[in-house]
Amino acid sequence: MIVVTGATGNIGRPLTRALAEAGQQVTAVSRHPAAVPNGVRHLAADLAGPAGPARLGPALTGASALFLLLSGDLHAAGGNPAGLIGEAAAAGVRRIVLLSSQGVVTRPFGPTRIAMRELEDTLRESGPEWAILQPGGFASNALWWAESVRAQGLVAAPFGDVGVPIVDPADIAAVAAACLLDDRHAGGVYQLTGPEVITPRRQAAAIADALGSPVRFHELTRAEAGAAMSRAMPAELAEDTLDILGAPNPAELRISPDVQRVLGRAPRPFSAWAARNIAAFR
Image 1 (cartoon, rainbow, N blue to C red):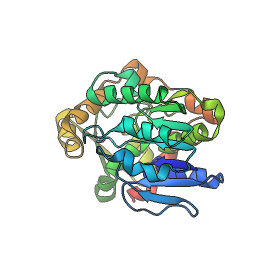
Image 2: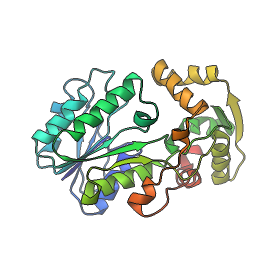
Image 3: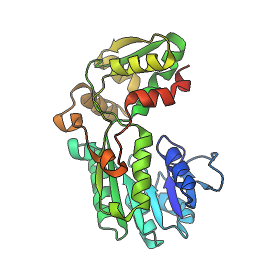
Image 4: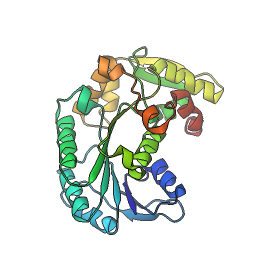
């Protein structure tokens, strides 16, 4: 039995499907009830907050492996993420794959990244086999623009000509599946990026190509972008994100070989993500 947390998100959904298609028994854990593939057991559990480990407990009975994806507000909510790892180890889980962040390496300061680095250290010392995934920015962040593209044919974003090598969440899911199933990845730490540095302006062009209709690009000021982002995330996190988007450091511009190394193929470009998800923009 493999337990997948965050099972209805951009990573968890394709991971759950891939494991089920590989013939694995899967328990899908998400905050709210949700549809899952045939044969997959579902558990609704909110892992944020001090009781998170106890809420995960029923899913861990008989489990051999765990994919651990923690919501961005887990630490802020007073959660106990280390307790989740301890609960899994105590239940006899033999392998844990943690979704961490590239920022743990490229920008190691700040409360969220410090907490995630501590969680990585807890995992390394916990007893079960482990692997750690450190992705950069997600291609699926472009879904922030879906409403404006549908309504106005418009992408509005800051730093229009500054790019980073964003990664397709489906590639993260594929690497996670490999780490859960293949003993060779025990102890692996994988930085996951896409195959190219791509700017917001070029992302808008790729969406237009997939739509077959024009999409205008409007460059926001940093202040405008910060105000919009702060409505969906803590202001500190919004400013931190804008620092990366506006002035990525060399490590954040590096195209990692790790997707190729694990999967034996190149990571998917943003254009492939856009084509596969274009219904959201129509």
